[in-house]
Length: 220
Image (cartoon, rainbow, N blue to C red):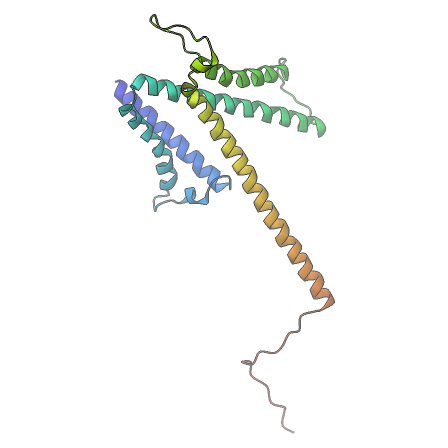
């Protein structure tokens, strides 16, 4: 029963993640390679990319399954906290823009926007708390508690830092790619406008093609 439940859960998450990647690539927020489909319209590249994360299961050969499970759990928890943090910021920006444009909100919660501020604070403190819990593990009956900074186990907090670094790399990478694309489009527009002004000052001379037949003058 546990095996069937795990397979069903993995299959559903594989479907959701692959279609999410396909939609992002289709809208231009992911590499266009992920939009490739076979003759049955199945995005096989997105499915294979999502399935690569299942290779983390082989890490249990090097470490215990419980330690690997805890590492993945802290990584997913950190990623979820960052996702909810971004959702809260998006809501605040949406609320501000609707107020600037004069929209009247029909349905509004009484705890907003204060609830969003509490959510932002909690989503910010949760990864820090996870890192501190992993860096300050509770001592066993045979160990002494941590008494100095040199005894910290910062290596245990790598899953938390990995989630934060993954988000920052994706965010700033997307910002850099967008800036480069906009700069290229702007330079192309400026070059096109310059060519238009140049053609106004010096119009292009259209010469007859050499291959075109030359009509003879009419006979008297």
